[in-house]
Length: 314
Ligand code: UDP
Image 1 (cartoon, rainbow, N blue to C red):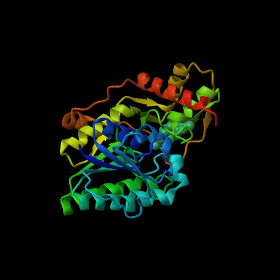
Image 2 (tube, rainbow, N blue to C red):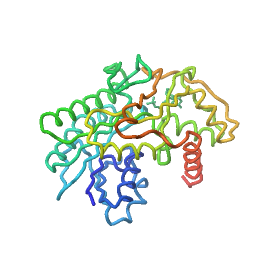
Image 3 (cartoon, helix red, strand yellow):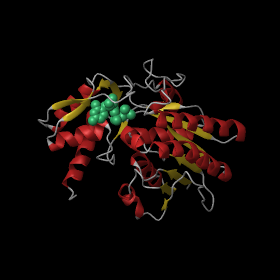
Image 4 (cartoon, helix red, strand yellow):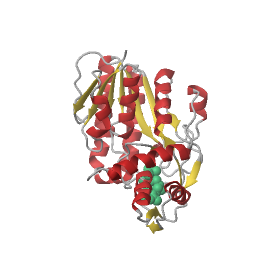
């Protein structure tokens, strides 16, 4: 039985990770300041005696008694709408928070895993994006607060690896979706699904010809477990190579929900990446990993989750 500490453990991805480690028989310490996470996400974990929740902002020193085997650093706003609203907190959690999480891992001689992002590639000039592409990021644009914080976090993680000999992992997560995404987090998956279910217009930004590729949460969690076990310390992309335009995605949601909502067009946000598609050769080769959940299957489960949410009294 290992003792795993997950920062951002009450967030969308973090809460699925908490549940997966508990299911494996491990002990889980979830650290979250609930700025974008919620206690409801970890409600199913609460009854497990191997689960502890600590309300704490990881930009301050993270003190934990006893041994820790792994620190998984997932704390950060992750939706563009959230990090635009919390630019300084986003920069702080990516920099100070990463430093504290690394310091904790070093003190405990624990494995450290950084949740990085496809945003390190910015608005990429190559497609698909391989891990050796350095990216095209506007440091002073609105998304710079997230992109640069994550790029700094990767640099800091590599420095701890090289200078302190820390056992580290870096996962670059591409658009991931599934139950427990926040209904109003502003990202395309919750927006389109809730708009479709409510009969409101699906807000396509720009002409909708920008592309994304969507990975179901269970596939991501499986990949993260494999990466932890791998011994590989350079960044690894985890994402779905199946790319589609935002407009195609809107039509898919309309089809799956059976909604008669119209598509309405809104201005394209500044620096919105025009393309995004992971090259997952490395994950295939090193982790023996590739997505298994078909888009329609994952979306059906996610639609069901949001349908339930909308039924709850507000
Ligand atoms: N998008 C959209 N309508 C929405 C929300 C997002 O057309 O209501 C677009 C957005 O401009 C981007 C893509 O969908 O091109 C994915 O946006 P999201 O906020 O999910 O995350 P991103 O991939 O940009 O980090």
